[in-house]
Image (cartoon, rainbow, N blue to C red; front, side, top):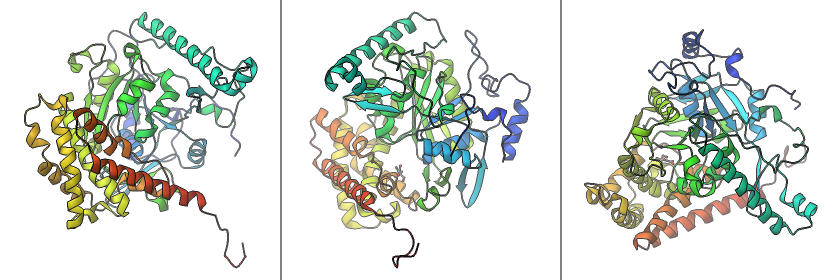
Length: 495
Ligand SMILES: CC(C)(CO)C(=O)C(=O)O
């Protein structure tokens, strides 16, 4: 498909949407005549930034799986909605969007609702070569090695050192800047000709991102953020909406190692059940079923450069805006929580996911099938005995009142059974990943329990075994998918 070159970002606010819901129209009417869409004041009292430039209201959503679609759809449904940019990681998805009605459809309780008015962007392509991250305009490690007469690993080392020097320069420049401005990464490692224009180039952007919601799979978070890290800074806020734990440690280590220039983080815990039926995904990649209504708990994490501070006292305008916007979205049923309570709830969800996700995956069954099956109850109890011991031994929970009861094996079992019951018709996200040949989040779920167990001296052999079984199952499924030979027409030879 040929696409003509356009402005860097397709701004849906300036397009006539082809299909609008009443609420979209209402919101647009409400917005009329109040400045540019990216800067209009909210109707929640969150007006402009008194000390700095006007507040940027745009929310970028990275990860357009089931959760990303639900959140994008919910945000466009509120009065005076913020401008939303969907960030596609593959050109094929951008192409599909261009050829579609440019709507997200959510089906809930048998009713389908389409919402429009989204802007879209294509994620820059980044490659990892000999441990160095290279974006699409940067010089290839192998080209550089050839040019300099070095071995690829030596060339990678030189490039790594240059990248570190650049990052340090940016860090210093940002530290010397007063609130607001973004120091863009103007890489010295760019190819001299700046790269050839390619398919979908018009949809790339290097504009700063004030608010980012990331809903990719846990294991893809680091590479996804590496691709946009240069557009985020200490005034930006990232909201993480993923299953599993340990993701932020990986992000800090690999993407934002320099604490003072790191963006602000909001952690979300989502209990909504959303899925994309395989039969529809091929036909409409912008469709999802909201199968179970849950809640979204949100908490702003304190910055390590202001240790011990109450994060609510140090909120940046972007954190406040993102939190307020998410909490005025009725469908998401979002509430703000203080960080210690948020952490405890995250651990409870981890315990639930550590049972439902691997067992449904290994048995290839819906969540409800785990109920009323005594042999499975035995497996569940073995797993929870270990998990409960680890959670009750965690140093960060020691000061919590009620840790022993809250994280007892019996209480965790009650939680697992109640979630399996409430989401009995759901296909767990892990089973879905295995079915479509994607990597699972097992290392951030049971793997996190095993790692924390090692820290506190508890050997989690049952969790370890179940994790290995899921990895094996995913590998078998992937091999089967790769071995599939597409057959056109009938086996009798007619096409
Ligand atoms: C709660 C549960 C198990 C619902 O399916 C889930 O979070 C998941 O599938 O990842």
